[in-house]
Structure formats: structure tokens, C-alpha cells
Length: 107
Image 1: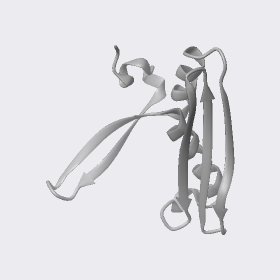
Image 2: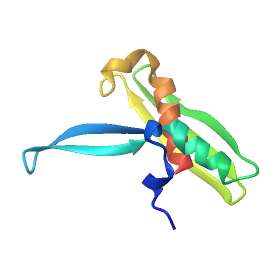
Image 3: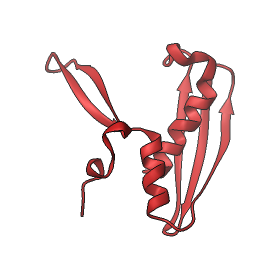
Image 4: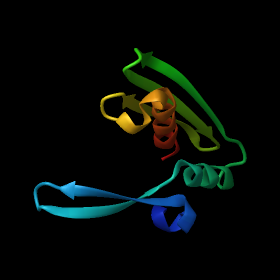
């Protein structure tokens, strides 16, 4: 069985850099983009559907629940975004929460 990261194309991977406070070093971690997860889900299933529902949204914090249904079953994912945490994309926190929920349901 292939490891998950080997299924993704190079253009479907983003590398995030963050600071490890414990060891005092920068760490780079590869993450698959939602498009790569979606491509793989389509390739591995004859039928695929994704639904999402806003669980809560008050203008400052958005929580969305997504359900991906495939040939193998249904999988839920929850995504959260906040104006404070996601300052660069604050005008679109609802969309960000939905993208995070979908990505988690596709995992």
C-alpha cells in the first residue's frame, strides 16, 4: 500500500514552515491541498458526494461540518476559522472553515 503523500502530485502539495518552540528550530511540513484529496477521492470511487452545513457563525468564528459520502461509507469533518486566528483571510472565514471541513472529511 502506498503512503498517502506518494499519491499526491507535486502541484498538489504545499509546504508549511513553522517554528518549533521546544527545539528552537524551523520545521517544514508537507500538506496536501484539498484539490489533491478531491482528485484521489474521485479516482477511487464510482460515486462521490460532499455536503456541508454551517454549524455556527457569528461573524468572528465560523464552524462548518462537511460530510463526504463514497462507495466505502460516509465521513464527517469539522472545520473552524476565526477572524483572530486567520487574520489574512478574515473576510472569508466562512469559506475557510468549509474548506477545512471538506479536507478533513476527505481524509
